[in-house]
Structures are given as C-alpha cells and as structure tokens.
Amino acid sequence: MTHEHSHSHDTEAREAADRRWLAATWPFVRANLPSLPARVLEIGCGPLGGFVPELERAGYDAVGVDPEAPSGPSFRRTAFEEYDDPRPVDAAVACTSLHHVFDLALAVDKLAASLAPTGRLVVVEWVHGRLDEATARWCFDRLPFEGDTYLQHHRDAWASSGLTWDDYFRRWAQEEHGLHPWTEVERALDSRFVTEHSEEVPYYFPTLGITEDEEVAAVRSGRIQPGAVRYVGRPRAA
Image (cartoon, rainbow, N blue to C red):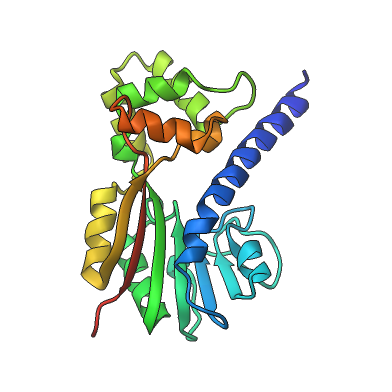
C-alpha cells in the first residue's frame, strides 16, 4: 500500500468512527433540544460539521463554529472564543469540545451569554481522566487491524515511551495538549449553569467498531471506566 493510500485509509477510518459517534449521540442531543422553531449553536462541530446537518434536517436554524468547520453558510471557521453573534440562541451544543478550548472560563461565559434566558446547554464530553491502564488495555485489545485512530496512536506511543501508562497519559493530556479534565469542565459549568441532567456513558465503541452495549457491559462489570459524560444545563439567573 502506498503512503498516499495509507493516509487516505487512515482518514476514512477516523471519519467513519466520528460518524458512528455522531449517530450514536444524536438521539440524546435531539431529545434535549427545544421545540421548533429554534436557533441552535454548536461549538466544536469539526470538519464533518457535527450535528449541524441533522439539526437542519430536523428544522432547526443551526450554526456550527470550529476552526476546521466545513465551508458553507451554516458554519463559521473560527475558535468559539473569537466567535461574535449578538443574536441569542435557544440551545447550544458542545460535543467533545470543551476539554480542548484554550480559555475554559471564557468559553463557558460566552456559552451562557449566547443563550436566551430559557435556553439549554447540551454537553457530551470525554472524561479522559478515566482512561486508566485497565480501560486502555481493554480498548487496545479490541482495536481494528487497519486504520490509524487516536487509540492506535496511544497504544504505539505508550509502548515506545518506556513510561507507566499513568505517566505517559498524564504527560500527553496535560503537558503536551493542556486538556481540561472533566472535574474542571464541570466546575466551570456549575458557575454559570444549573445542572438538569448528568450521566456517565460509553465513549470508545465507535472507534473500536464494537456495539455500545458491549462497552456498557464492560463498564457495569467493573472491567473498564465510563469514558464520557452527557450533561444538560440551563443558565443561572443573573
């Protein structure tokens, strides 16, 4: 296989996993949106456009914000911290994006300010602090044979690092990428929002190509940690 074909296959594998994740998460997002008509803002929609296509098919007036967003009238290619639109929205969606933002407090403040007083915030977030060695090994044992995904990267990088898993992953998450842990995200959300719903859910199944139920069973048996949180909040009264 040529390098070009290998790169193309890796991109296809990552996109396929992302599409499985969006499809699995959409029912939760849709169930927590306001009735039509409504304006919805998605931050961190990514190169696939996140939920914006589904939002528009459902009849919502939607816009997705991300430096790598697709081109088109429904997208803004910018960081959310730099996004500026004075019109309030009825709902905001942040799917695996808040742990990435540079200034978490500013992002949460902007989310609260962007919502109408009766608006809703829907968050799905990776709890990377729960990716302990047992969970990582469980994932690595179920990786597909082909395609470069973030889990393959971690398996190979850890093997060549000479570090314990905890030291390797802490260095990757904190020192190299500055990711915000869920405890920090949750604290920031609590400062501006009232929690209406919060639950721990599976995260890795779309990349592994297994079913969500298989990961749920592993979590319930105590073999692995839950990898994500689904959260719904409303703005605190000024």
